[in-house]
Structures are given as structure tokens and as C-alpha cells.
Image 1 (cartoon, rainbow, N blue to C red):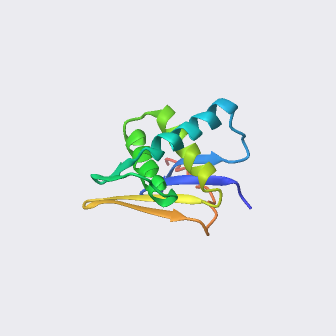
Image 2 (image 1 turned 180 degrees about the horizontal axis):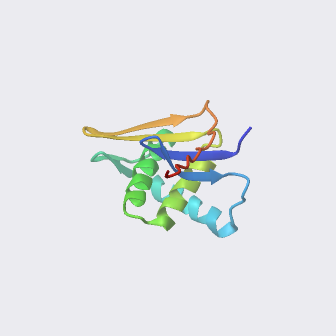
Image 3 (image 1 turned 90 degrees about the vertical axis):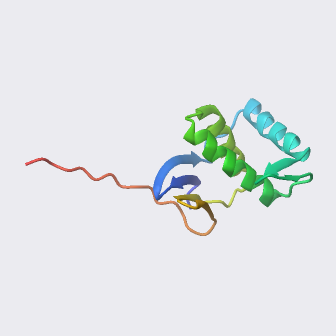
Length: 124
């Protein structure tokens, strides 16, 4: 069984989080602070949710992670990915599809991430 959680956008792996690498105390404290901040309420699609449950927190974090990835904010991306990996220990993959009408997010708990194979082409 793999301890890797992967984030894929349009079928291409963007992040691989290895749960075997322990987080520092500072990082764990930061994730707890994220939870405390969300306890005060979050905004999902213009709706304020005063006491978000785990699924709503996950939706909020995934949306913010995608935004951080799109703006090349590696620090925020790492923190948000760590949050998802630690709060959802059975999560294997986050599959994000960017569509014309919006974004589709599929949380995969039952399919191990197998990695991607790079294919080399030889010029003749």
C-alpha cells in the first residue's frame, strides 16, 4: 500500500505528497492554526459557512490549493496539500479537471496513485 497522495490536473500529476515524511512541529502547528481560522467560518462560492464540517473545509482547501498552484505560490500549495493529506489519511488522489464551464474535482479514496511514466522520443 502506497502512502502517496497525488494531485492531478487534467490527468497530469502536479504534486505527489509522501505521508512517510513526517511534518515538523511548526508545520503541524500551522495546520492546526488553519483549522482554528476555518472554525470562524469560510466562504464557498459566495456563501458564508459559519461552522464548516470536514467536507466543506476540504472543498475550501482544494479551491485555495488550485488557486495557489495557478499563481505559483509553492508555500501555500505545500501547506494546503499537507492539510488534505493529514486530515484525510485515506485520500489517494485529487483529480481536478479544468473545464470550460468550471472545475470538476474528484476525491479518490479507493485507487492507489501509480505514478506516471515518462516516454522519451528519439529523433532519427
